[in-house]
Length: 252
Ligand code: PGA
Image (cartoon, rainbow, N blue to C red):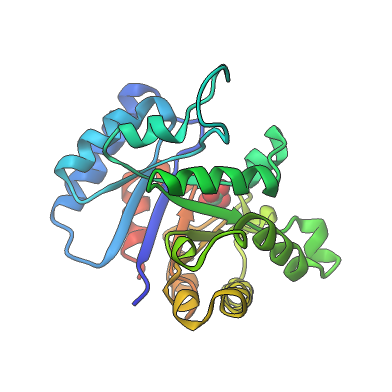
């Protein structure tokens, strides 16, 4: 059985007090949660320690939004995988988000390095891929995602790939209010799973959770999650509100 996951990517939002308030609300609801969806919060790095404290007490997982591709040393402003691992509660890390690709020049080659280093510290990468609107209009969305996955992931061994979560996030759907149709998500998720199957075999392909991301909200989540190859969501805007975020968890 593949793990169902709902992960909240807070991006660059919330003051410390607001972060505490949001974590309080999510933790309180998680405390009595009996379902089988893994809930992950990915706050800004400054609040990872705070979130880790909650994760110690409540059924909640914590992910970083980014990590350095370098091991340690003179890289001003960067946070290493070792640092993330040294905060016990940090179990996941988003890598390759389209905003990092667009604004910070991240390539799949760099992302591949980040993934390797995260795995060496037993942190689960949540690897984001997805096409732009232009690429979808040109009809090259499948090739685009296939190239991304090949470059960022296919250097991994069979044991390593099982510790990856993939998030398909069409760039045109992120923060735009325009989510992919459930069938469009399913087409891509099925395609990604077949790529994994060809490279790694049936067991690995079937065990890897593939999340959909891009304007998921409490209204559209149910239809998206009903697709057989969609194992959850990476939620941006709607994860900033506890009620919306947990309503998405409950859409399974
Ligand atoms: P969104 O963001 O839900 O606000 O579209 C998703 C993401 O960027 O991970």
